[in-house]
Length: 109
Length: 115
Image (cartoon, rainbow over all chains, first blue to last red; front, side, top):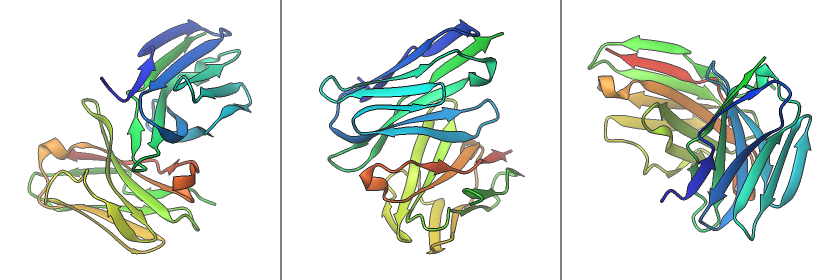
């Protein structure tokens, strides 16, 4: 079993839909990162979370430390949101960064 | 700030040649990471530095790979000799206070093709 599991692996939705991407992990962590990789290849850090919730524009990230689960939400999705969204956790035991496999999101106009 | 700067953006070379990838981290960042991304394996950490010192190089595939950080503003990843299986996108990332959970800032990557 992977230490970081993302779901779904692939998600196709219509423009305007509310999107949820999930990340579950099985290790103790000190922080969780959400990153976005566009089709062109560039990787952008979206959020770093250690507790609670963060919001940036139409993006919202939440984390439940007890349940070892985080979600990334996109409100009023747009085709330009199409990208791969990656969850990564910073382990609190050895400070290794463990990466999820990514969720490929396609938003159709 | 210009962000993390990597060069070259694309590199095509023949098997057996030496390849050098370059990275300039964001000024003031004390952590620098080298990642490799392939379709099969996703993002893999190769090595990371803290204050120019290599901390964890357990991800470096083999002796053909070496990385240096001679000063706070420059790092290189060298492959000698290169092989077709080294073809991938290589990303450099930097961070400040990474162990406190600060964000990672990625460069645009170098797409390496070894023929």
